Image (cartoon, rainbow, N blue to C red; front, side, top):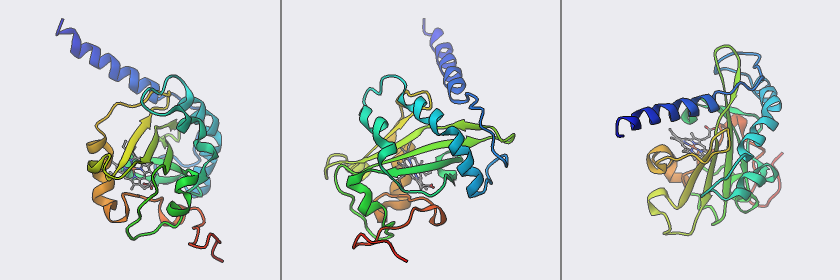
Length: 209
Ligand code: HEC
């Protein structure tokens, strides 16, 4: 019996790899990781429906299904899908919900205490060395009540695979350790790279320039 377990594990890993490496049919103008902003935006246009339909498939189990249903109606926090080495060499498109928008979209470098109920979603895709785009996970963060998860800075981290399955992971080592060590001084927030950020919202709510 026990000899079957490693095999089952391998089969599962292959299945996961296969489901994550599904060909999207979207091809980037530049292969690899150095797409221009416009090229990355074009890939995202092609992938938009594929990503959303994939994330929406199946039961979300411990992840509230409405996060996945609703995130596209939140405020975009990035202007184009910027490359993120930290997220497995993928391009990220970030959204923030209404509760979190005013604070997140200031992209404040100092201590930011996000309001309870703030939600962030980052869709992702990768481009291989032949230019083929592949859907990546939907990364989610939720700010919870102070003291509810002190080890993670009171953030819940979640991820949905491209085929809609909630991803089982140790959120401390897979997510929080990096966010806390690199961005602990600004509330655990990574923010898109400066050039990819949506127009910042000032404290008065008006937009600069
Ligand atoms: C090695 C470091 C690292 C790890 C591990 C990591 N992240 Fe991130 N995360 C970042 C960085 C850097 C950003 C800024 C976005 C970018 O680079 O485009 C970010 C951004 C995000 C965002 C957008 C909100 C923000 O902080 O600006 C979400 C949501 C997110 N990560 C969730 C996750 C989840 C869920 C995991 C675990 C599965 C995870 N991250 C693992 C570094 C990391």
